[in-house]
Amino acid sequence: MKISATTFNIIGHGLHAVAQEMGEKLIRSAYSSIIREARDCSTSLLDKAGRVMAQAQFCPIHMNSFGKVFEAFAHRYDLPRIEPGEALITNDPYSGGQHLNDFVLFTPIFLDAELIAFSASIGHHIDVGGGAAGPNTRATEVIQEGLRIPLLKFHLERDLGAGMLEQFIRLNVRPPDLVMGDVYAQVAANKTGEIRFLELVERFGQEAVLETAAELQNYSERLTRALIRDLPDGVYLGEDFVDDNGFTDQPLRVAVRITIRGESMHVDFSGSSPQTKGIVNSPLTSTISAVYQTIGFLLGGAVPVNDGVYRPVSIDVPSGSFLNPNLPVAVRARNSACHRITNAIMLALSPVAPERVLTSGHDTTNAVGMGHMGQDGSRVYMEVVGGGWGASASADGVDVVDSYVGNCSNIPIESLEQDYPFMMVEEYSIRRGSAGAGKHRGGMGVRRVYRILDDDVTFNCYSDRFRIAPWGLFGGQPGAPSRFSVERGGELIPLGSKVNFLLQKGDRLSIETAGAGGYGDPRDRDPSAVRQDIENGFLTET
Image 1 (cartoon, rainbow, N blue to C red):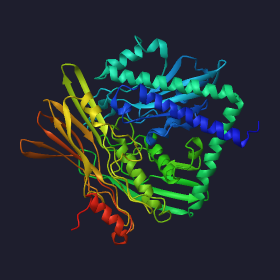
Image 2 (spheres, helix red, strand yellow):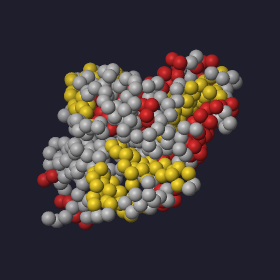
Image 3 (cartoon, helix red, strand yellow):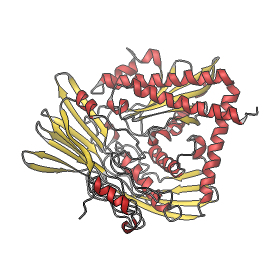
């Protein structure tokens, strides 16, 4: 059938609104602060073949991965025969998932007993068991990182509640009420997607909605191909490095070779470091998702993100590299590698698209976690602490935000101290002097100081940009690297970027995240911008 431009726009925006409402439902229903406040989650609508029709603008590393994990389910099950009340769940990084904390949930949508679509959600769960209340930085195998859920088809009423799936999860996590509360929040989000999608179908008809979804994918494909066509044909190389694997000081190389031919792009990661000991390996789905989110970033946010964006881009990732590891290596901190994928692509394309790229920022998941067993049970804190975003040809970098791979929100201090009485926050401020100078300066990092109020609090974290500072472009200066430390009895104890450390009552834990590199020669900076930086205390007149 022929869809008018008006109907196309109404249904297209309606599909996005459904996905966005799913995300808001998930956040408002969640129990843990990592989803409820930090918004470490994503939601999506897929057609019955598993092609993304629309998704909410939440966590980019999640958003571009729904299709890959659906492929794994389709290989495992005869999905056209899925029945009402059934659902699909996994967190397995070796079956299309990312890391164990990310539970992926698909629920089918039926119209008059006919399968027509799927609603989907991903939530980062506060704890999945394993060797630490948070990231186990000593893990060398995925089994040491926590509970691994296979590609599982289950029945919502039979297997949750008193059923086997819920009881199995509860027995393997530290705060079972929080984890299962967030699982139910995902169920509620998916149900919202089903209800709203069927309302669209009731209003416009099944054929019109599904045809619009297909054409919306084609529209995104055309826009993506147009962007690629604007770039000169050629081969472009870039590289960047993860500081280390947490066991040795050897940097890990992300090498990218981008080939542009007409309206297609091929991204090849041959030459990247082999899989490594520790938690910094990136599963294939995460690596692919990082490429797609970078392409979306270069599109400037003007293209609806769906299956069509992915079609013009082909990707090769050597098996056995730390960007596509083999079982059983650990993968919890996969975002360290994923950020370097974005950085390497930015460097590769900077000569031909200088107006589109960013300099390097803190560009890592500064995953700060603590755990404590008190009289009221186990409490697990996890937060992604922001830093400086890179500068561009047109603007300074942004101060104190999560990276564009993660896009998590700030958790209010009041919420932290209410949920986690074993600590308080003494300082939360911009880290002055952390930005790299340039015609456009980099964004500022953050300084946060926690006072520990109980003994035997475990600090569990992974981060990066401790050794290799964020770089600038076209004469811009590097940003200051990150640093973590503990002040105890007058002694300052420096901490590594990937560490499990036992804190004691009275300790002051200091988190200082990296600033970003500058863009362009600092001598070309607008004098009024320099005066404003001085007035804000970001610079001194000397």
